[in-house]
Image 1 (cartoon, one colour):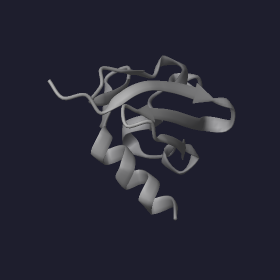
Image 2 (image 1 turned 30 degrees about the vertical axis):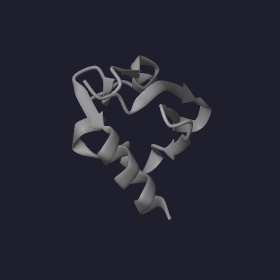
Image 3 (image 1 turned 90 degrees about the vertical axis):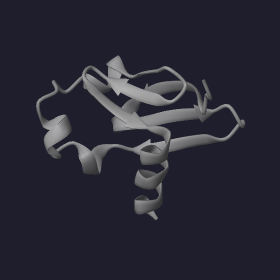
Image 4 (image 1 turned 120 degrees about the vertical axis):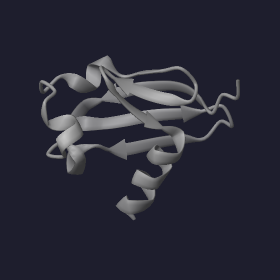
Length: 77
């Protein structure tokens, strides 16, 4: 069981802080994704339910893999 993520924390203004086991930290702006189908059905406080198992970040029934999180971050730039 390889772990990539050490922690996840929702921050104000829909920013998701993701800490990697390597010591890197990602601050991902989730606002561009709020209108996407997979997140649209969540209440406005959905980010507060973010947890990680070391590989995925979960919001209720939605999972984002560490690779997907990195891809989303690359799209921001």
